[in-house]
Amino acid sequence: MFTSVLMIEKPLSPEDVEFVTTLHGDETVSFVVLMQPRGDQADLLLRAIDDVAVGELRNAAREGDEPEGGQARQPAELALNVSLAELRAQGAEASGLVVERHPLDRLKEVVDDTGADEVIVLTEPHYVEEFFHRDWASRARHKVGVPVLKLFAHSE
Image (cartoon, rainbow, N blue to C red; front, side):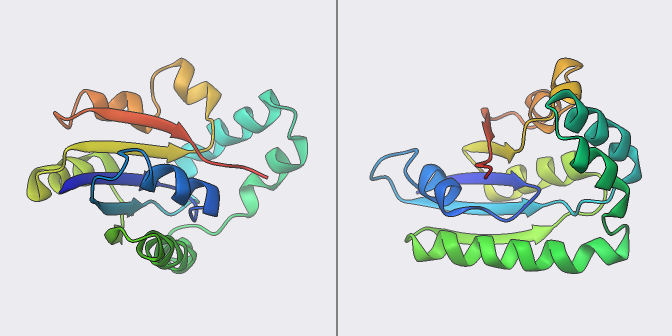
């Protein structure tokens, strides 16, 4: 069985589920999903700049309205549960957890503990972070010791 650790920041869309569950053809895949709650103040400015860069001025103005800290955990748990149910509905084994602090350290632990074959980072584009190689995928490549695939989440 092929094991993928899937890092996400929002619930998986049906298109995302279809894509990640078919990446390896007919091979049976097990997913460990790591969901990081939004609302981290350190990321607030970068997200706002990303929104401005792609012309999403309304989103940039709303960035400060997202739940923070403990308030962000409940929506993250719901998003994780929805994503796990969707993966299982497609026939994949799936487990997961919400990661509130040090997501890359936790990613490394999960990769080591599960013997994962790869990491898939599935997020919306974060142009500023990507330009400076501060996005999850760029940082994970130097930390986890397995291939890291960066995919952009489906957006409406």
